[in-house]
Length: 151
Image 1 (tube, rainbow, N blue to C red):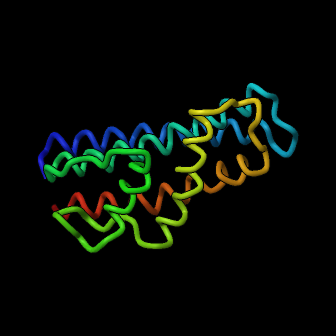
Image 2 (image 1 turned 180 degrees about the vertical axis):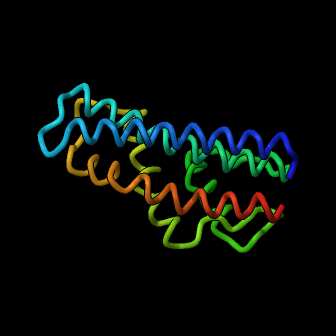
């Protein structure tokens, strides 16, 4: 892996970590009460940013391996699938089945959030995704950092 790619991935990981720290602060602020519409929109934005950062990292792995990014209406699904296999085409198998399954709600939410309206968000679903994001990220980060050391 090129040093430039490593640095870009490390920068993405740091930004995702900062985003999740801000999300955690916001969840503490909301507590067990009902969030305001502004707080819900902020939680949605943080979750959307979290997932976009993950896709950015995967796209950097593709670029480094000189593999074309998937295109078409299902490219987000296909991107994840490229990293769910056994080191095909020089790509690390970052997404074991449990991790791939854990990312699906974030992928689906990303589409809803960026192509819909924040005022129609479901707080219970949003809260569940927000509460799980740090754990999903920790698992993915570990796999990414291991893959970078091996390449």
